[in-house]
Length: 401
Image (cartoon, rainbow, N blue to C red; front, top):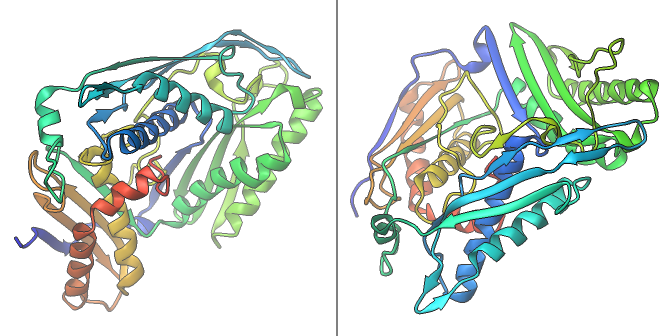
C-alpha cells in the first residue's frame, strides 16, 4: 500500500486560547441558513437511503444548493399570522434512473424536507407558512463516471478541494456551542415562547467573555411587553448559568440587544424564525462542519450539508478533519492546539489525500518530536477508515452544521 502523505509540524502561532481576542459564532437550527443546511442534509440522507433500498448502493447526487426566500409576518401578542409564506427551493443534481427504472427523487426530497421542518421548526405550518419546491437536475457525466467506480473498495475523490478541522475547542467555543444547544434543547422544551432561531456570538478579549444572544420569541406564548421582557431575562439568566459552568473567566451575557421597547421594536415572531420576516437563507453560509463559525481558525468555504457522503470531498474531508483532530487530541497527551487540513485531488482515492497537514501547538515541556509518531499513527488510522464517515453520515450520527 502506498504510504500516505502526512505532514506534521509546529504551528507558527500562539494557541487560540492564548490569543488576545477570539470571536466565535453559532447559528441555531431555526436560523434561515441553518434551516437550509438542515433541509439539504435531510434530503441527502433520504436520497442515500432511497438508493441503498432500491439499488443497493448510493448513486451520484448533490443537494447542497438549497435556498430560502423569506416570507412576511404580522406578529402580535397572543398570536399573529403569516402574511406571505416562506419559500424553500431544493436545488441540486441526482440520478433519476438506474437499470431502466425511474427513481422518485423529487417526492423523496420533498417528504424529507417536510419531515425535517415538522420536527425542528414546529410552529411552522408546512404548506401554508412555508412552501417547499424542488429543482433537481441530472448530474454531469464526468462526475458520475468518477463516482461510479463499482469495483473500487475506496471511492475516488470527486473534486480537488480541502477540509479543515481543529481540536480541542477553546472555552469560548465550548460556551457558544453549548449555550445554543441547551437553549434549543432542554430550555425550549420547558419554555415554548423561545423559538429555534437562536444565534449566539461570543467574544473573548483577554479573560473577559461577552456572549450576545439573538433569541426569536413566539408571539402565541407572549401576553404583553412585560411578559416578553421576562422571557428575555430568563434566556439571559439561563445562558449565563450555562456559560459559567464552563469557565472561571468573567462572563457577560446580553440578549436581543436591538430591542427598542419605547419604539415597540422587539424580536417577536409568529413561528420562531426570522425567515418569516425578511431574512433569507442559503446552504453553507452558516456553521462549519463542527457547528461553529470560528474566524480565529482556518475554515473551508465548502458547504458540507447536502453533499454526497460517498466521495464528495467538501463533505467528507471537513467531517474527517474534525474527527481526526478530536481523536488525536483524545489519544495523544501534550497537545494544546491542533489544526488538521486535508487536501484532495480529483480521481485520487479518498483515503490517499494529496496531503494531510497537521499544525500543532504543544503544551509547555512537551517536544513535538516526542509525540509525532503517535500523531502520525492516529492520522493514518483515521484515513484508512475514511469510509466510516460515509456510514455515520447516512445513519445520522454526524451533524454537518
